[in-house]
Image (tube, rainbow, N blue to C red; front, top):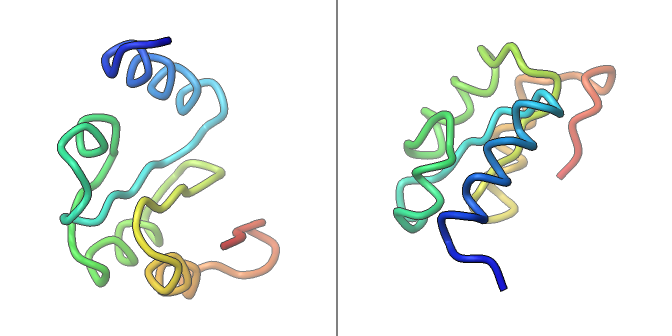
Length: 81
């Protein structure tokens, strides 16, 4: 079984390899914050999602937050909740 640090290192490697922006709500655990590109409230994360240069945005939060983040994107962006 991997340690938390090993999991974080693998997540960081994969997000670079696959061009992923990780957004994390402020109530997520510190372990999640450490791999996130941005940490904030729902509104702040939706603003960051709109600015993200990566091809994929991964939201660490509850479903309605992912849908809030989805709003700045169009169907052509391939965003899915």
